[in-house]
Length: 470
Image (cartoon, rainbow, N blue to C red; front, side, top):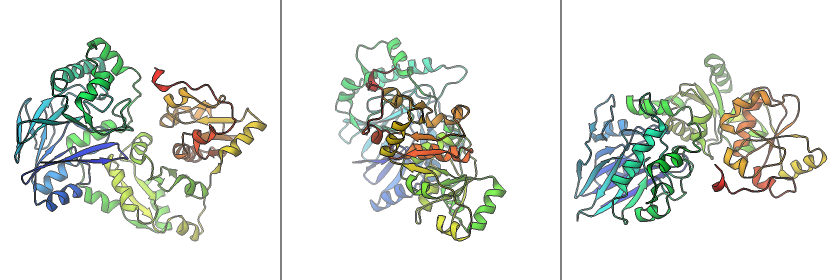
């Protein structure tokens, strides 16, 4: 028996490869399915099942393309109603995979079809659970994503409480927990950076698994402090439930190389968003006017989803040479299938064609401190998340979280300098590019973000441990 976690840091997502006696099950695959197929072929094994723990909201699963390419059976748990052919398993049903057994445990709460898969080895020992978004390391799934007219988030949380107590916490302590996500995902509040753990350890350390916890306490703690989910989540659920374009077609369309003239014409004709995926510091030094910078080397896909509300938005992009397929792939992972091509030759070709280039002023934290010392009334905008800001911030800073920057535009001045920072510089350049495209010409990015600022003598609020904040 072989169990392999295939973790994708950009999405903080774990897919799983289980192999036994020439048969393979893939759990929660990503959109690009070739790596799973190649892994099975290398082992001379056949992919028998594609197991889905639920209809994912934060990424588009590869279940359809993988099943089509391999003949594998797609499996969902009870209550799932996909529009395509799939096996809807019953609670307690056992699926045979080579010499091992995968038992279906219906664990509603995060969503009503949420299912945990229990792996039982060839000796009958309960070995591991693949818990999807039901149980994370240090946390549990948020109960507000599947809210419908007949179910409130409190009622979903009650279902989750029952699922954890009746289906998961009754399992042996030495069972390994393999969740669908780790720290950085928007599917939970406070997930650990660890991507697996023993169930017994989670019973001791996970706040939601306290033995003496009442259902009322669980509901209150699980629903407390939930931020609104990213706007693209419902559309990803729809794609996972109803189907989507073949990934190879999406990749081919998105990788069309366009000359500067063709690129500019395509922007004008389609109303496409111009997305620059280069490093923040490279972008600041020169970019196509009105383009938005979301660097491919950061949390690219989640920020795409948070900041581009329409997944059918046409996108034309600029990328470092050789990374064009990576950009289109990572867009497609979260359902943005309408990339129309990229600027061939990048910004150098754009400049060589005599086209206009814009810049954003970017300064060191030391230079920012010097400006602040001369005039502490300068406009400082902190685009970090609420918890980060509440824990500690520059005394005079205005808070405008990047996720909700559009809600704060009316509060920001267009005719005076604005010093923008985040934690390390990635998010602040995204914010600066958005503001620049909206006509805010006096944005100044603070390099190194709050980490660098904290090493200067700029007055800051007293630190408050985030764990004490509600």
